[in-house]
Length: 353
Image (cartoon, rainbow, N blue to C red):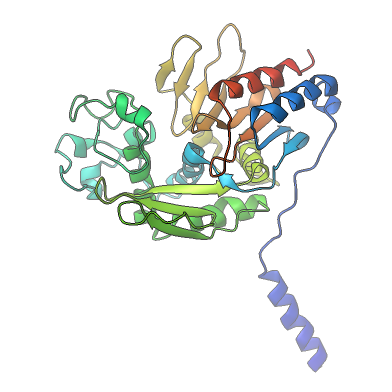
């Protein structure tokens, strides 16, 4: 009897253990509709370009896996797509109302504080990077600063400007509404349900104004710059493999193993272009995703996000394809931005017609 009770107790313990993630299954390039010979040309280019890894996934199955795809690297601005997934979940739960204004949420910032006009920006405007708020922010590049309008130059919702103030404040709003860290939420709602194998959710915080020590090795860290803003940037480190799983979740319209993780309607709304950012090649911006708009050269919509101009997560539903490119930006690298465009060209050149 005592032995039987012990078995029941042990069974209960094992039920509560976290699920161990499994690698994505593999297929041959030909099964994915790609030429193995042409992919060898891609490998040669990757060898000399300075890439860290490239993964190509067809309909949830890996057919090309080059480099250190299981090594965690900083993902830079691809972090915004991770936030998108959490917003989709909490909007559906009714915890977040995207029509709420910053004034209603009690959101302000350090001097120069937000104006009454700026406080009329809605969460939806921040998601679309159309807040009309041009306040200093953490983790802003020189490229962003060159294009920043003057304060109150545009009404909320009127003008697109790729703006880290919007993205960082969205992170704060999510945490304020849920009472949890972004990193914990991502592990609970995304990483564990889809079986990521490297992301563990460990995170820390740095203060760039007062500390120049190396960034700790963690899956995530808040980058505080209190002289610029109250709201830190939230950085992620992730492997190419785990990012490929995340992209596959979006390719599958938010479903994983028969369960709806992210609302399908949210993914559709997020990957609808609300701003045209490159009219020459029909690229727009949705909500925390760039959108390739269908035109005479492409029959279906695709969506992507880059990081530092050289990392990329691309989702191409018309080809059932997910593409993940990584560079070790925290180590020495010589990768050039133009090489990313060449890699994309080589990938699609290997696709059999």
